[in-house]
Image (cartoon, rainbow, N blue to C red; front, side):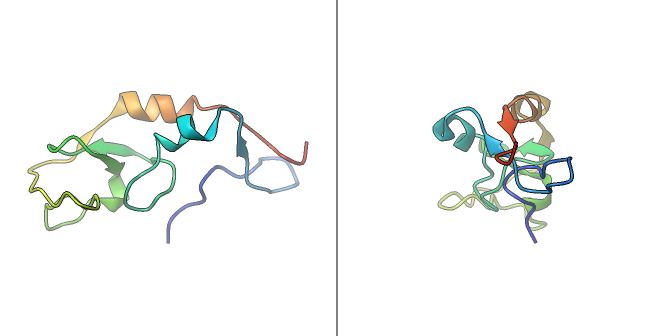
Length: 93
């Protein structure tokens, strides 16, 4: 089951946080497989970034329309740093 599109507010309200940045910018950092924010992102040899949990064992890129073979899923700390830096706020506060 995919994670929420955004983290949950850590206060007692427990609602999903919302992006402060415009959605087109935030949408760049979505996994093309699970369509959630990239979590533990890896880059495949075809250049697609996906969540580590979305990497299939058959070594074929799971990105719609790609399907290229890859040998390794390489951690992408630059993308992870960017995703963590996207500003969010609680809509109830």
